[in-house]
Length: 406
Image (cartoon, rainbow, N blue to C red; front, side, top):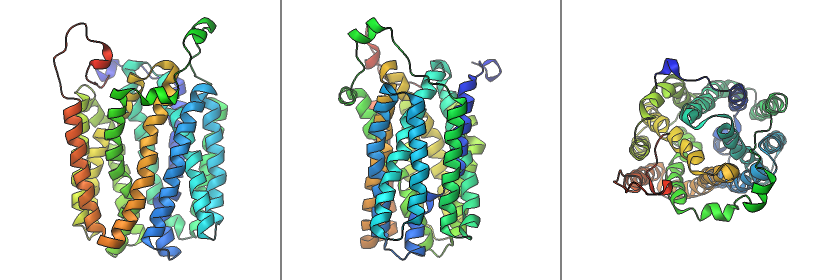
């Protein structure tokens, strides 16, 4: 379809988009947590990795709980509970002065932040018709990264007033996001007639896990997420090891957001009508290549080049992956399917930093990045094999057909 003739997205989507942007603009805590713990507080890389991993562990619980609550309780109350809880936990984390308290608040922040993610994905699928979802997911991801580019550029300046300031501003923007949801977003959970509800109860999370085709997609996404997650621990530690300042790390991190803001929509127009398997394999390959480049970087310029390659992979990969979830999920279980896919980000956020801290202390950052490169290549081969084009009989069920962008 020609871009000029595409139907407009519904008004509710744009309020959801705005709340996403506001929340992301103030997301300072997690990208700078490992740097704060090692440089400001003097903890080891292993301790910093453990704290970020506890955040990821909390996210595991939050993803599962949020997916179930989004289907049972509703998208809107789940989002509000998560956002209000995240604001409180962010302040608690900023005020914590012992490692055990930092661990407690980091885990709680993971639960509350990730709780709202499945509800956001489910609400987007509720609001937007199937043919417009690839564009909607790309726009939402564009908002995430527009906000991140703003936060990355401003975080170094704000941190000059003390790291606590970062936590307080983060909490304030999260509260503002909750206000937007409360005032502007209605509940969108599909409601079936009573007779239908009595005959076909909502699938449980266990039944989602038994969807083999979907779980293959989830497993491959987990491999890529494991590499994505290293940017929260390994990248700031690598730049510090190379002698870069916090402000210089912020510039490297900002490359990612700026490129996505500039290129995301154009790249999506190019990829949205191409086979999802090829697109996902290409994205995973680029992410793996960026990790290999990080292994040999020691200047702002080299880290920025690696960030360019990583960002191209991310632009190609993430919206394509996200658009498959509502295409495979029944309407009554969108929250649970979104929760299980969000779980991969939480599991990756738990395991990757935990192992990266140990590997960095034992073998150095170069070995870690080369391992990430191998994981990216493995994921690309998996996508190419799982989603390769094939000829099917005319009466084959939809679940047997290859994934596509639409």
